Length: 309
Image 1: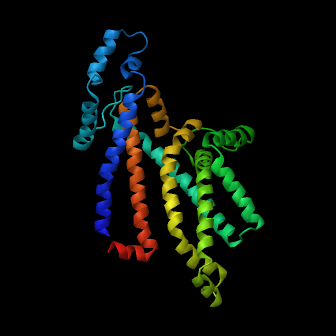
Image 2 (image 1 turned 120 degrees about the vertical axis):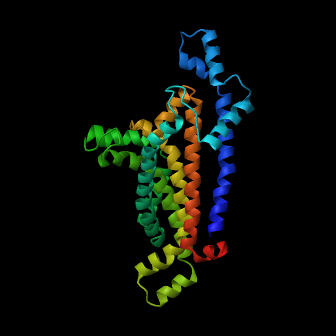
């Protein structure tokens, strides 16, 4: 088991290097000059060229990339922001906890809604509850987060006045963003839980448990759900990573001072170091989440743990 974990951690290195190369290449070919944007419209061409030389933007592509990746690997230095001249890592670490908290609360909302609804839909297949739940799941998957966020603000903040419309400082501020970001994931988890449970409850050992006189709740939650958890846990882990990226628009809608707003502003100003650092940080977090999901498999299904040994 430990050998497997070490091997997966080592595999993070080429993955992150690949992500860094793709992000660096996209920012390199993006139109716009960071030096010109930083100096403003009144800057002369000579001043722009001097700043470009100071930033190293006149160097060849491979040299720029090597300087970027070597600083990260050797000195853990993501560079300095073009806009604020502050260390990129400090900018990320000051805002990433807010984004992580938003994604975690969104996943919590998705799990609390998705798994129970999926279980009930599977045990009452083709019933009125099942049909209504699948309709709402389809709506949840199809509804854009930014549109849903604005709709919730109009209803609960502007119309009813029971919840704040912006910020993320108190539990009341967290309700609308968490619902906004968690609804689409709840729909995905509901559909996966339903399909996974439908496959399990038709197995012979479920009929045997019922024939032995086990309570229906014991049959469903102890026998069926435990064996249906593998695909559900996979979807929850993937949705957690998806919400880390999807939080960008939600933070913008609710004026949350997280990593999303910084990334959007950095893209607009061609702040290459900050964009690259933020994307790498999110990619690293996503890889760690996938690793934790793989480790969790071993504790859900002992057969997987025996394969690791």
